[in-house]
Image 1 (tube, rainbow, N blue to C red):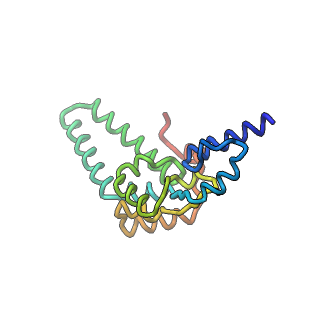
Image 2 (cartoon, rainbow, N blue to C red; image 1 turned 30 degrees about the vertical axis):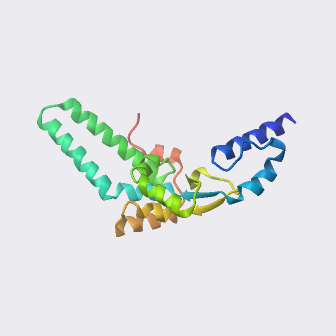
Length: 187
């Protein structure tokens, strides 16, 4: 009985955290409540790799990189090797993160924040209660809508990026452990 209660409590906690549960329901009526009350919930799921590919190939990211390059050049020209080295390390970490996001399943929330207005509009237009990476969602209680393509378009991707996104969708992500083995940057 204790195991059943722990399992039921855990499921209720997970569903509530995902916006698909009603914490006012008793554990005993959880299944019925979820089936009846939560059928109207709608979750937008996305392939995080596609978001990463769209962002890292966007004009927005290009502008950011130009500014960092300008700062790096200015630091080197001024003989400020400490600032130049700090910027180099920052860019190495960003490259590592881009690989984890673009080839694996690393979170992309900070990339979605860069287009937050568009994300909010998409959520409202499609009546979504929540959006989540498809790699982090495994429920079947709520209605799910794949919004990957709509999110990708918020970054105004060019034809080359769209082709890479199409190719990424056709493949499984590379496990984090494999990416770490390939990674030449070690902490």
